[in-house]
Length: 208
Image (tube, rainbow, N blue to C red; front, side, top):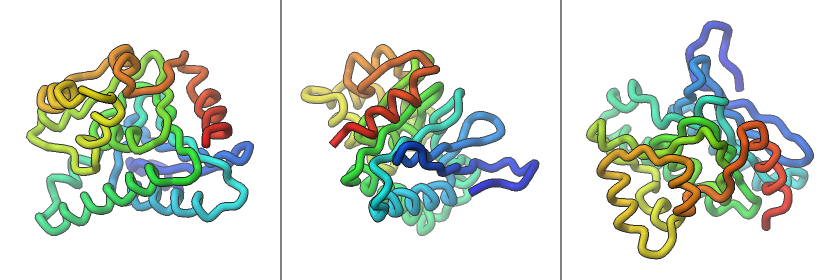
């Protein structure tokens, strides 16, 4: 999937390396958004992964500046009650499909990982983050609440007794540092930026 020259849209690039599917979210600004089009494209790729005899796993990544910055606000503000429910269901279906994948799906994170982007990362089986990563559900600052399962997956990632920590981070729109993310179990590995993809590929090839 690619965008015409000059097009200011998030695109999803798919490639295969050493039997691992690499899904790369990209945007001219460096801050890819999870639009309805992109959510649908991710869903199709994860479905194809399940049917592929050759692919052993999957790595999802973004740009050097951002894994994913969440949903596109212009789309969100244009939603009606009916289309909002449809978009929430579409995103939830994708996250469930990733979480339940029999093949490992690894998030390779650099820079910002916010909102729906954090939901996407939380649905992955493993999260590898660079030293420059930062996380959060910033919706509270905008009067929004994630609808793609992050409110359930975050406390599960943080482990027993994490409900209070999760609630504090969600309602305060707290920017979670990579140190906080690692200390609480939100991410599994923290590595130098240049090693994020290689580490993610290694984990996708060996996990499960």
